[in-house]
Amino acid sequence: MFGPSYENTNLGFGCIDLEDGSKLQTIRFQMEDLQFYWVADIVDPVMWAAIDVWRIVGRFPFLFYMQNGDTWDATFSVVNAPFGSLRNEAFRRGANVAPSAATATELLSLVASGSLQAGATSDIPGVPLRHVFVNALVTEWAKDVVHQVAKASIEEGTYA
Image (cartoon, rainbow, N blue to C red; front, side):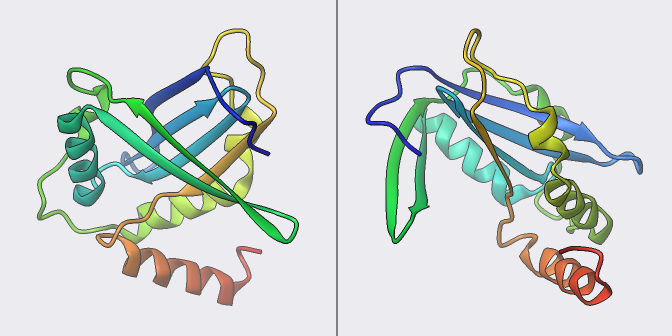
């Protein structure tokens, strides 16, 4: 799936508004025609701490493992961190905020729905997308709530 090198890359941040007024953070990294799309709770302080460190260092590291038959393909990429504040920082909260089961439910539902893949557009002009990978970005801060929501959804049969 990965080629020998990728010259065109793009890193983007965005947000998705939920019906209850909360928001999800999106982080998109595109290498040529492959786009990796992560969705997280926008108030997750662990995620924001990681973004802060990457911005201090000035670089965002990515390590991807992709199964290719019986073997694994690994690609490591480092891109420049954005300068200045991100527009999503307006929704940032303090470290004492608790994860929400309602937000975790919406996050998992959205990731599982396929709608993000179906609606994805290239962040690199003139480069159509070949494949979009969408994943939930879950840190230690939210993992227990996300695990409980996922377990309940599987037991109820609402997720495949």
